Amino acid sequence: MSDIEQAAVQSISPYRAVQNLLEKAIEQVGLANAALQSGDVEGRGLAVGTAVTILGILQASLDKEQGGEIAENLDALYDYMTRLLAGVALEDGPGSLDEVLQLLASIKSAWDGIAVEVEPA
Image (tube, rainbow, N blue to C red; front, side, top):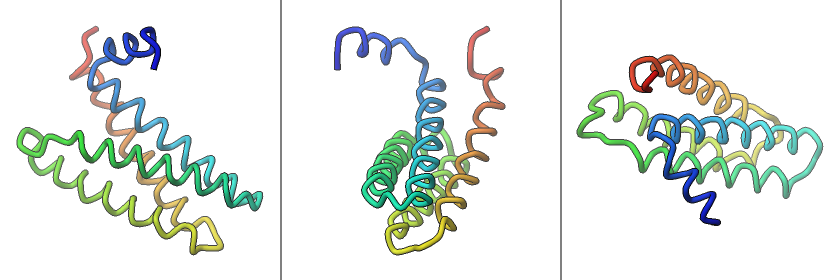
């Protein structure tokens, strides 16, 4: 990672970092879905692997002490989505990818909704 990239990463708020991760996870699940539709097994695998990595980062960043029940629920949800994605290679259709995409979109929407409370104007 270059000095410029490191400075950019260090200068964003934790709120924005999570927002970026959610955006990237949604993007990767979308890419996996497109790869599935086109028969690109390798592309699907790479995108799913990246999405699983992002979910792991999101899960590891949860503060269960401060976040309480919300953090516990997100932990369970991230775990559920990871398990769904792990089974994608065995599926012929987009069922699990669609479900993960909907769950991520819901989390992102809720996360975007708290911007006023956590981001300085």
